[in-house]
Image (cartoon, rainbow over the protein chains, first blue to last red):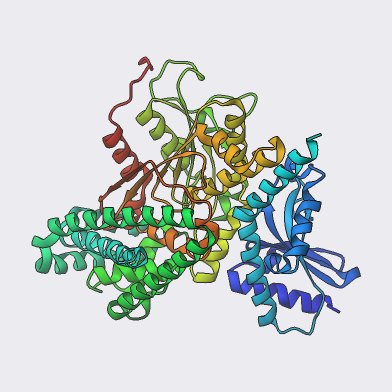
Length: 156
Length: 426
């Protein structure tokens, strides 16, 4: 279980690590959300979960509209969990930028409030690097596979 | 000698080149020192002390090594050119060998940085650190080359505007804006770009160039209503004049690379959602789909923004147009990127690349250091430049060595010559 106070401590530890400012977080009831450096944070009190998102393809409705994209990427994520920090892909417009077009994210959920801050920060550093790698190279490789798959599907 | 060893040696040479260049300046160019003093007067009380210190440093150093200044500059240029060639080799090999080569490259670079760090530590005590630590890395390097006469705080103040260690949130509302005629936001009512001064040709009649700026670049200065007196607008006008082109700007309001290792690495990662990436990505996709040539100038951190935009344009063409990566790269070959004072590596395959690097500019090695934090992301999809102009134009104030207006555009004009201009004078 992760209460709001502990979730804030985790977010603050990350902010200290990367020179971000926790005053950038916004409140919504017991929830909070916002960008801290390269990662997005959203605490959902009802689920006692801190959701952390790294951008993989930002701000494109047309890119995220392809219906076979997320199933394809999440199949790879299930097969290679270490390459995505045991996370999943999702397409959404996050609460901290409601006016923007949807983005493709890599997402992990933190639900265990017993972890030391240092362990959480280490996990987030690995997650940040994984998201960066997907952003620049692994998404390209995955799309190569998806394009070939689509072409095979079209063949009679 | 293995290429990895060559890269280490090259890196050390490049570092030495930067040191030599700064030393050469510090020993021989008194007038530039005076200009530096003028610049730092804006930095209030501490800066005035710095100016005197800087002047003293130049005079002291001049007595000892004035005669070596010219040869030091020549050596710097030769070493940097060799280092650039070795870097290109590394990029090619990494591309051929894929992930494994990239890992080997990362190890070689890490070794180089350890060596660099050790060298810096000897002369500049605790001022140096590795890779991405911009503040200490640059300040340490320059402090050492100036014979440690300049202390770290004064140099830090000289570099503060360049690295934007304090941040400037006032320009954030304009982040990602596309700028056209009059340097105003481009749109349906303002579709044109900035034309060469005195040009009577209508918008749309000259070749088009897009430009994305780097760190420490303002869009508007509240105290100066003339947009073209500085910042991105002045550079857009300069590019229009130098190339006889219509220039579209993409404003990048990033605030710098950060003051320590963790912050700097995270700022590199933030390119994934930098607002300026979106219009650049869209321009490239549009050019690829319409098969119309597109030319983009990128300066400083704008180079990292451009790299991200190319990678995203490629992925967008793959997903939406059902192209393989090779087909997307072919489609993106209509894009030509000319980069100034920025990354040497990590340019995704597809566009044609031409680079301009001033060996006295502290920013390219800092960006290279930052990219080593993401070795696979940098080298897995990394194209060679078709041309790389390496030159040496040192200034006591490193901001001058990095300036696109004062250093890179004049060099571009020197290399390219006067443009064939269809523009009729008013």
